[in-house]
Image (cartoon, rainbow, N blue to C red; front, side, top):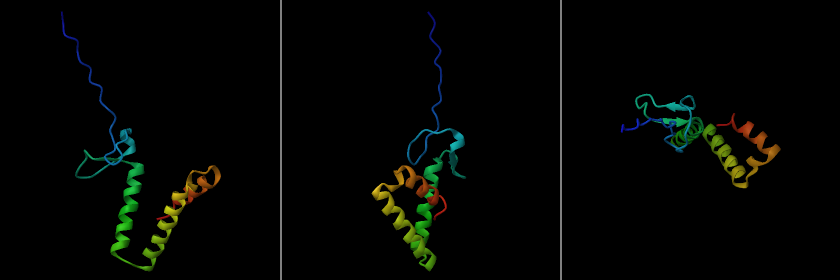
Amino acid sequence: MTAAEETFQPTAPACWCCGGEFDERDLVRLGTHPEVGVCLGCARYLQRRAAEREDELRISPAARLRVGVRGAREWVISRGWHRLPVVGTVLQRIDRHLP
């Protein structure tokens, strides 16, 4: 009797933020920590959080405008308008160009 060979099936790389599995091309790797991969959606979210933190640290008229935009975004999301068929598509397209 011979032992069966074990087959190694590598798992898909996972996002360190949301835990979802993605193709390698859909992950952003950190420079000095290549073991850390973040999906594109989480990378966008982290960029927005970093910009929000910078605005908190340096108050300016532009920062106040961005705070207003963020407030409007949260208001729209809390009402679920971003999920509506026509209005949601327009809002999501606009959101790509906002801070």
